[in-house]
Structure formats: structure tokens, C-alpha cells
Length: 479
Image (tube, rainbow, N blue to C red; front, side, top):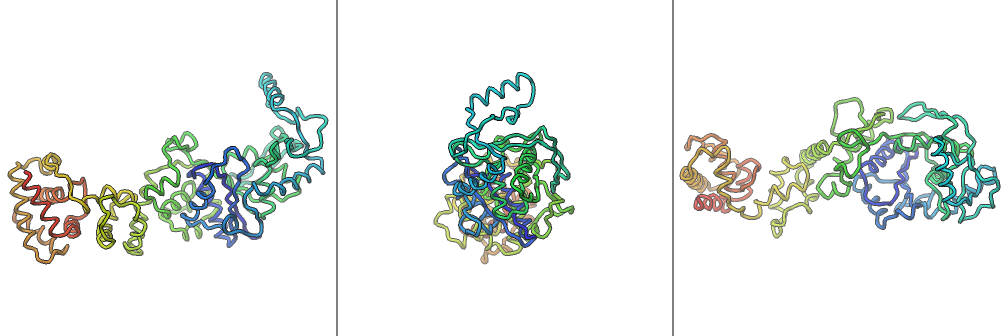
């Protein structure tokens, strides 16, 4: 059996974290087995359709490196890949059910159906439409809803994550197959599409488990072999008490991308959110995920969303890319994240800045705050300097004298290299009798007025001789 998986999102807005994980797992299963993944756009809910959402889905998958083998853009033998363009296919399959007596047109007005529902609520019994099935149904045509004619029975099935499952006849009902507008419901369309496209593994959230008996009844009525079912546990809010929602602080994948989270880190984090290979490994490249992934290692319980872990992973990936490929490989990704003050500076200078700051980044957007002083003189804030915990014990005159001594020492350096700067700084410690935390904090603040900076000799080296000395002298003069 050739493994064929699918990712079938609805174009209804932003790309949620859970949506993307539902794309990662089918991709990994398909790639590991040498099969293929299909991208199918389930756009039959026209009321919720959002213009541009399909392009956002495609762009997000491409950014993550989840290339699909069939679907929009790439085409394939099983198109169309937009459900809105497959209406005639659904009607053909619906006719099979009508011909076999397993579907009927239902002209019952919505207000009557609501009355049936209220009657059941008043009697405190479950509402099942099959108990109100009309006696005589007209011939079906678009404009009248088409319902499945359920035959209640027990169903047993196996889920690759949840194990052996069972349901009784009480959950089977006459579900709608084709809506009044002629478009299919999800319950019907996905079964038809998966059959037509040869999908072997269906992966979706556990919220669909309650509908499985109705799906199995449809497979049976259509004489179809069910695929492998893989129910993915919810991604939970950080508190672990409910399914993750936007109100819980989780941003869309697009927002994380715009904040400077790398695709490698996002893929790594989401793949491991509810899965592990039984080891202590935390950093996985895509190829490693493909090699190590297995359905039986997906956890049954929900996984708590932890943004701090995502940002930690992102920092690890920033350092991993530089360690393995050099800072030049990271630099192109930083183009939209430099501060406005960097405008006019060339790539060579910005690359030097990145080379000494990258290991402090959690996201690429940190560059805006962390590097501003490399491109313009910071505002001198004497209160910030004097109240530094390492400098509080010194008088202003002592600080001024120290700065002047530093300036004289550094001005003597002919070759402004990082090694020579470090030698000079070490000599200053001996000459002033100050502790590294005291002297180096003073110099660091004088040249940056930032809460932190890279190694002092590297910062001085990148800023250059003229800028460094000018800033130290300006602070001494201000005091």
C-alpha cells in the first residue's frame, strides 16, 4: 500500500497553531513511507470563507518546508483540489446513496426541526432526527437538503493513537449530506474526497471522534474501505484546563513568523508538541523528524502550549544555523528586523553586528532593541549610569576620572582589533584596581546605555575607534 496523506484546511482566516500541527504529522508520515501528501482546500462553507486565506495556507506550508505532492499550484491527477469545484462529484456519490435507499430529500423547514429538538429537550431525551424522519420524501434536487438514512448498529474501529474504539446504535443519526445550497457538508465531502484521492491515513483532531460512527456508516453504505484513522489530541492552553484558543495568548503562525521565529524552530516545536521518540533529544531538523516519527509515539492526552519553550527553541536554532553554516546563512533572514536607525548602513557592517549579537537573540525581532546603539549614539542617561548596581558606590568625580583614564588608554591602541582591545581592558583592571564588573559595566554603559551588550571588546571593535572614544568622552563631559 502506498501511503497517501492529506492536509485539508478550511480557508476561514488566520493559521492557528493546531492547524499547522495537523499538516506536519501527515507530511512526516508520507515522507517517511515514501508516499505523498495532498493539499485539499475545504471551502464549501461559503459563509465563513475569507479572501486570501488559501494563499496564506500555501505560503505558511512553503515557509515551513512542508511541500505537498498534489493540490493547488502543483496540480495532480485527482483534482480539482478545491471542494467548491467538486460539486458534481459529490452529487454523483449522493445519487449512489439515493439509488440504494440510504439517502432521502428532506424538505422539513428549520423551524419544524427546532420544534422537534425542543420537544426532546423537554422530555430530557436525546434529539435524534431519525426519530422524526418524514414518511414521504420528494425526489431530491439541489435546493432541498439531502440526508443520510441511518441504520443504527454497533461499530468498532481502531485508532492509531486512541486504540480500539466502540460505539452503540444510540449515536447514529440521519446527518445532512448535501446542504440546501447544493454544497456538501464536511461529514460527506471528506469521505468522498479521500476515496477519490486514494487517501490511506486520515489525521485530525480528537473532536471528530464523536462523529466516527456516522462516518463508518457512510463508508459502509458506499462500500468503501475505511482508511487508517489518527486522532490528534488537543493542544491545550498553558494552564492545561482547555483547548488552546487565541484568547490564551497563542498568536497565529503568521504573527510568530513576523516576530522573527524561524521556520525550523516552529516545525521542531509543533512536531514535538504531543509527540516524542522516547529520547531526551529536543532539537530536531526536518530530516530527523522524518526519520524518527512514528504514530505510536503520539501521546493520548493533550499537550500544553508553552510559548517560552518555542522561544527557547528559536534561540537554539539561531545558534545552530550559525554554528553549522556561518553567520552569513542567518543574515538574509534578518532583513526585516533591523532598527530604523540601521538604514544607510551597508551589509558588511550589519553582518559584523549580527556576528557578535546573534547568540543573545530569542527571536530575530530582538535585533531592533538590541542593536540600535550600533547605528546611532544613545541618549546619555546619567541616572541610569550612576544607579547601576556596580557603580553606586562611586562618586561622580570618580566615574569621570575612570572614563578619562579609559579614553586615554584606548586611544593609544593603533590596531583596533578585538584581541588588542581585550589586552587593553585587562591592563586597565590592573591600573585602576577595579573589579571587572565595575570597570566593564561603566564602559559598556557609556558606549551603549543598554541593559546588556555582547562581550565588551567585541562591541568596541564593531563600533570602531572613533565612535567608541567619542561616546566615552561625551559621557565624561556630561558628568
